[in-house]
Amino acid sequence: MEKVLVTGGSGFIALHCIDQLLEKGYVVRTTIRSESRIDEIKKAMNQYPNLDQNLEFHICDLLEDSGWDEAVNGCEYVLHVASPFILEVPSDEDVLIRPAVDGTLRVLEACSRNNVKKVVLTSSVAAVAYGHEKSKIYDESDWSNTGEDSGITPYAKSKTLAEKAAWNFLDTLSSDKKFDFTVINPVGVFGPMLTSDIGTSNSLVSKLINGELPACPATHMGYVDVRDVAKAHIFSMLNESTNKKRIIVSESEMFFVDVGRILNNAGFKKSPTKQMPNWLVKILALFVKELSGVTKSLGKRVDTDKSMAKSLFDWDYISAKDSIIDTANQLSAMDKK
Image 1 (spheres, rainbow, N blue to C red):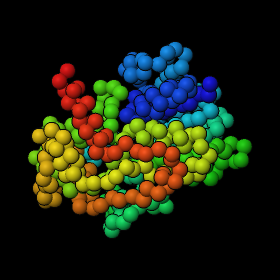
Image 2: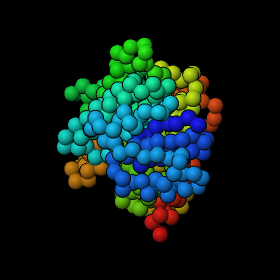
Image 3: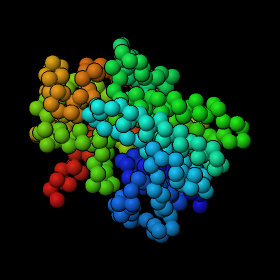
Image 4: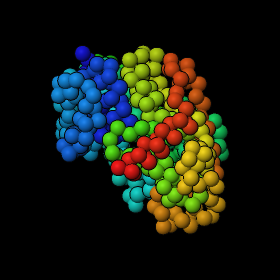
């Protein structure tokens, strides 16, 4: 059976990619930064037979050259999912930008040397729709503005620069080293966790259901279930129709207060149902580091054109409402253990 490399195997999206690939019968190799994550990944996949033969691990770091050729060698496909994601604004933006840009190039360079058929890169809508003064309906032709006055977060900047670096790298390859390439640009990714690591996006749901926020900041974003994002990666891996395309993956968009209301109506009564004044968010952001990344986007809509994905994919997404409630139910159950 064909072998697929999934980078960043302990991550939220990557784990679901591994899960769906094993279910389809692929041999999966995955990269992790530390051997300490192997047992939890194996535990998450223990329903699959012959796991020792069908799931391989390589220790690699996006900031180091060593190990990437060995990780890629022998793999027909590569899903490059690994990239840092944190809510707060770091004191040094290079903490996010260097692994994203340099790591992406390390992986792609290794692919060009090892006869890979196709690479699917996990980017983000953060590379599409941020740093602009006026709101609009964004599509795959748009790029986030990384200019100094754009107010873009380091995370969005890292995703934009990494994706641009990837497309530029492909343009420089000689024909004998080229491989097929697709980029997935998901919005906020929520849904069931396969390990005890709840992930960055799901931590927002955790804060809501545990009453950690008195009200919701006026942030607007898209929502999609992690199972659909993983499915989009594997579909793109196998279908030539996605070659040379960016694909926004979003089920729907809403304000954060709408998420709070969905959860409150579902029985999570600590979840706030009111929106916080922007001035209060800006004050709280001085003390609550997770709010520091949203102050520049308060009140700005981030709506996306979903027609590209609808024209390519042959399934209906899990609804954002169901995904959010599923996430909350699992988090609640985890808290009770």
